[in-house]
Length: 83
Image (cartoon, rainbow, N blue to C red; front, side):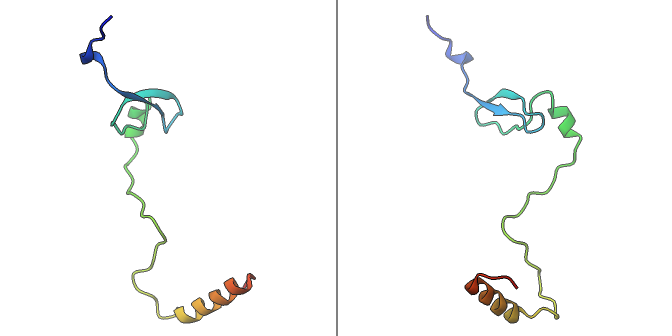
């Protein structure tokens, strides 16, 4: 029996990131919600992507003594104790 190649497509098993249901999605598609949850999730605003790593202030404030903090932390880490 010959399979019609036009009807074949690659799919992957995916869980819905809203309700947890398992469903098949076409390979390469980035949808994360099942068909039932897509309309509900579309009502929520889209958030900004998160940055990786610690958040640093744009400019240090005048009341922060960076060298003293670093020296104090280095001493604590070397001794393995608490402040």
